[in-house]
Image (tube, rainbow, N blue to C red):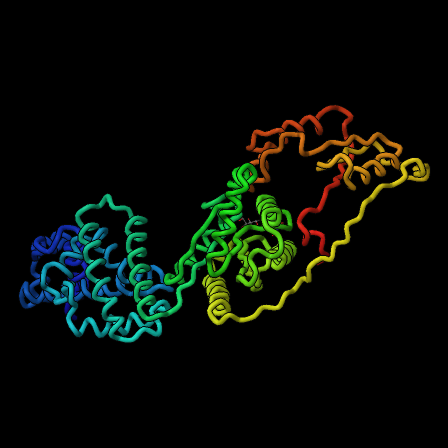
Length: 486
Ligand SMILES: Cc1cc2nc3c(=O)[nH]c(=O)nc-3n(C[C@H](O)[C@H](O)[C@H](O)COP(=O)(O)O)c2cc1C
């Protein structure tokens, strides 16, 4: 039996390919390959008739490797065209010797250049048709996009090839921006509608918000549309002081095609900052200022009483005059699941269709018919003798503003009826600056990162010995729909 050949053709090509990727094509020699394989040059010459044959085998292997690894559109499967361009640049940056061999040396006939040869162009256009963002565009338009994006992508690839300091993020964003500009331009030319969405991001985590990352994803799926955004949660102190800023914000919403409320579910409702913003909207302009405009909401949460938050936002939106398209409630981990991403994308597609086709929306919550009541009880007539004991006392938190308002009179009744000491504290006077930031830092040692009067108040209230009073809250419902029964 002849001895088994251990140095096979495949092993030689693999070793040669590794060598070329590391040191460049000029390093390809029988001696270098033999050194890599720890053998003599004899098995190489017995597998390949000549060095030229070996070079061809390595080049073929390189071409297939590039096609499968970099150009198959695997980086962002939902955006195959962008993905392919990005792969091309990534190759230039991270695999420069391979890039040089396949695209710069003239050995593979896979030359880029401004005008890809017809046989490549055909395959590329077929590939472009698989991209949801390019679907429906005719072949001439696709080849125009291809030509321009090809030049731009190749330019970026050369920059990245020679300047490794260009970061991956910068490259990705730059290419994406250009793609968006290009596609928007094409849509404009063809009279395909482009919508302007205004996003009110109400997560106190502003741009680091998980919810917002989902929205960025949707933005990428619909590059022809424009998304304008405000991080409203941390702007509340500005809006409180400067009501014209609220008016300005409302005017901006009016000029857009639709509004997207984007927020996390906090404490079974919307973050307090968003609630305050909505109150300010109602205070600034009455009578449904956004009449007829479309709105929806996008949230993330752990799906615990997220429906109450969604019902609330629908109720207020309708009172503000919006046509409200039922919102989307994602779980905070949904982004990592392809099926869930698909569902969100479809939801957004539906939202876009409603706007473009002006689909009428039925109002879900009728406006509240509020009959003003003036509550002035006869305190002298009250008899609290039958009231049960409240034990250690009650801490009554209130947000009274008006010294002769209904709330004041209601809390007086409460105080008088209970025999125990009721200590009333107005939360407007404890130096509370902001709502919960959702940072969860308090989970560590129960200390809030915000250094405002609330921390001091809560510590003083809860720490003194014997101060185990029961908390109770009284407040005025200022925003109509919060009073609705969902
Ligand atoms: C203070 C706080 C309260 C929360 N309350 C709820 C809740 O009532 N229901 C729920 O499903 N998720 C709740 N969550 C989870 C958040 O909604 C979820 O983590 C969300 O994805 C955070 O989004 P963001 O990064 O955009 O702020 C709460 C989170 C925090 C920090």
